[in-house]
Image 1 (cartoon, rainbow, N blue to C red):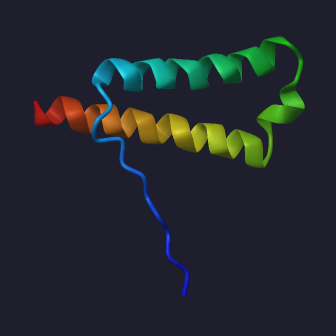
Image 2 (image 1 turned 45 degrees about the vertical axis):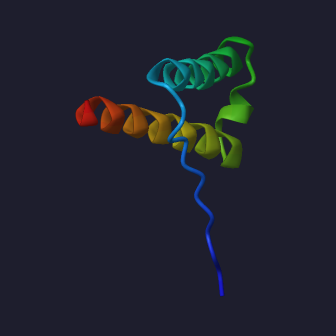
Length: 66
């Protein structure tokens, strides 16, 4: 059997979520600026993109619940 464990950041504040989101976006931009575009392709980029989307969705949910 394959079990996936999901970690929910329920106790994270919106400010902390925004900080994490900004950090991932800066990381992508830094790779692009420094010429490490090869790091933007493949699994590494997918992980960063997935984390960005997950944080954006989590922020939307928290704002919607307010």
